[in-house]
Image 1: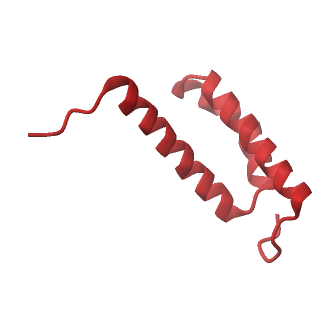
Image 2: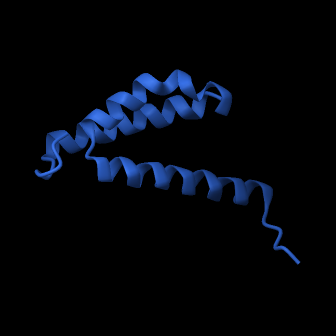
Length: 78
């Protein structure tokens, strides 16, 4: 995706769909099998602006961390 132009509505929907497909694949695979989602990652990176890819990757990491804290609890260090 060209960085100089803001994505139009159709391009945004394509980006979000590619992101959702990648996240679905990653959710279904273990960390060891994440490489099986490389094809989805390539489509995601091709359909989304680089800054969006960076944001969505950080967002996924945060959501996974938040999910882990909520399920496992938080133990502050002493």
